[in-house]
Length: 467
Ligand SMILES: NC(=O)c1ccc[n+]([C@@H]2O[C@H](COP(=O)([O-])OP(=O)(O)OC[C@H]3O[C@@H](n4cnc5c(N)ncnc54)[C@H](O)[C@@H]3O)[C@@H](O)[C@H]2O)c1
Image (cartoon, rainbow, N blue to C red; front, side, top):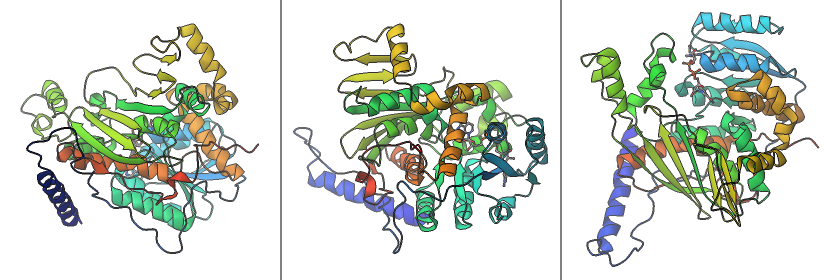
């Protein structure tokens, strides 16, 4: 498979190089089209008998019986949040570390919820997926397990929600899409940042036309995680995240920045991401940190980490918009997801400071008072409904609770989920596509159309309600 991929890339590069020569690159007279983005992964044809799952509706569930796979830092939070949703019941808990299962059981008990069955084998998730009394498999394990468990769960007739990313490779993205289309099960990637308060308000503003036509958007995952990456006791299980940074370079975690702006831009509901270019700095920070912390002769200091400190990926859409995504988890700097929307009538940005600017005075930010009034006026109806409770239950200030609340709300009302399998595939696909672009000096790489031509059928992103 790897060999086939290398051959495809070599062939594509060959074609691009030939085109450059034939266009007399030596003496370009002006900016002119020399070649098109390289299609390393052509869009796969839809297997016979399958149809798309845009706005998929499944039978409404009275109660959602949930199995949580992976009970580390993130899984424990999910146990807590679901315990505050009466239509949700956790029936199975799985982790290879038995004390994590015990901790989750204790949380259920202390929150007055019934005990769940505990599992501790590495492949317990297979047994759990086969149970008749489970409706939703909720995956909070490390990245490598997300797509395999999700695919298997759908095969067993279960709905799936997985922590981000949903997939690590394009091949996994297609497996998710094809399995969801064939089994007609919901597959949602748990992109909690779409539900943050400013993001929800600016989505509402965007949908009501306040920014005019949104032309450019920016997002990021800038979060100094060095202390966790190297913490063998309290950090990630089996150092899984450090291992990914050792092996790959690119936008390894694009979803937090991309999800909210992709919805504001109606990606695959009227527009689609067509190609990307991606460039990384070299790697400096991990090595320096490891030297300072463990000594220059330590194993950690001597490892050859591949992930450049800062990655920037630029995506162009079919309708001519651009999205910039940054990834940096190893530099000492304040947290930021940027979340910027720039349109023909206005602008909004969340980091480094919240600001909104509107025509006819978009040279200046609105005063904080005026911005806060506007944010109140455009508060998203879902935030109006559940925002206060979300702040009390918590999870990144409440956005995690809004996400879980919406998931259960849609499943119990038989509604399409806010984020579908195409969102999961598109946002996750940036991971492998950016690695290819980075490895080839920012070569433009085409993004597969996971909807296979249906991206223009819906005209806007819609978070459905029963009324
Ligand atoms: N959306 C967010 O804001 C957010 C925040 C943090 C983490 N995450 C994501 O959540 C996921 C988990 O991250 P984390 O920080 O909790 O990592 P973690 O290492 O703390 O947790 C992973 C858990 O999976 C368990 N595990 C390993 N193999 C297993 C198996 N075969 N079956 C069941 N469990 C198994 C580990 O024992 C561990 O408890 C990652 O995808 C991460 O990117 C998302």
